[in-house]
Image (cartoon, rainbow, N blue to C red; front, top):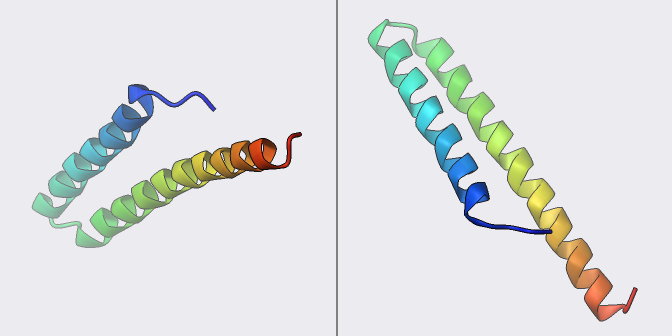
Amino acid sequence: MNYDVNTIFQVAGIGIVVAMVNTILKQAGKDDWAQWVTLIGFIVVLYMVASWIHDLFQKIKSVFLFQ
């Protein structure tokens, strides 16, 4: 559980790439694909955050239960 600035940059990088692809697809008239790209980007970031929260809860559990 070693979090640093890289994790913030990972989430920000995914957000920037998804926003760019979304804009390009909307300009091309492919609104349905743009929504799918946004949804997939959101799910990827949500999975990353969920794994970090899981690690955090494991660390808290080990601190308070002295394991």
